[in-house]
Image 1 (cartoon, helix red, strand yellow):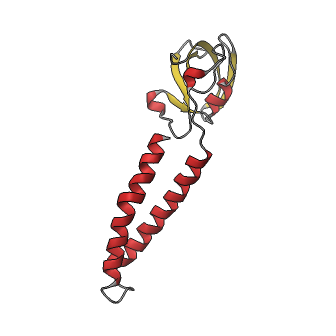
Image 2: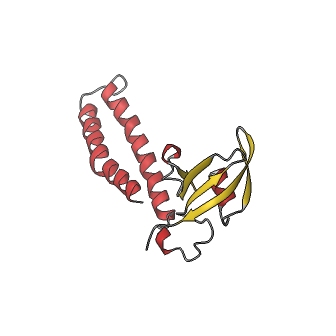
Length: 149
């Protein structure tokens, strides 16, 4: 939520006013049909307005959840850090996060990802089958942890 708010504030408070200033200046230069500053500025302003609308909708729909307040710590829910093992006993540690926070290289998988959907509600020892682009794979949940309260 904080990252979305920061991006929204930056677009609204910094980028958009700068583009409006450029477009206003360019519009005062006369013929707008061949005015690159004007044409690019109007295009960029539409992009910014579209992103601002998207961010506003996301922030309105978001619900901030504190994983440390999770009451059922025996199952994998939002904010859980889980260790899973595949058939070849390869272990992976993942954290179930919101879709806006996901970063696979850091082990953060989005709540809507196929693996996260399969792990939702799983307890230690449960086997979950996941269909991935590379084919179907089975994972065993080895460990679940949540941040300290």
